[in-house]
Image (cartoon, rainbow, N blue to C red):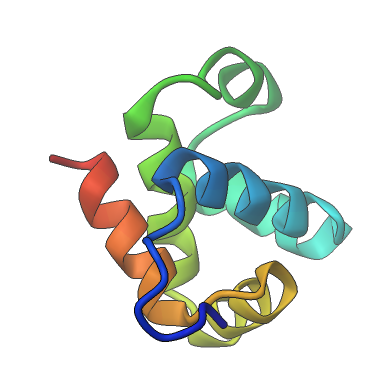
Length: 90
């Protein structure tokens, strides 16, 4: 988790970290692709697009165990990931 009063992490960096965590497990990766409608090519070409990064974080938000798992793996709070998705969708 982020220490109190620390500056927020970069939303794009958090989303990319979350994607790495998602893709580290075949079942999670398949679920991501199935439920978001994204495919591998769309992910590769969209890594610099806020909408794609936000979709990755929204996917996590919709399944709390994954949201918590990704947050723990990235050393942030689940709220940090939710805030990053909000920033990416503005």
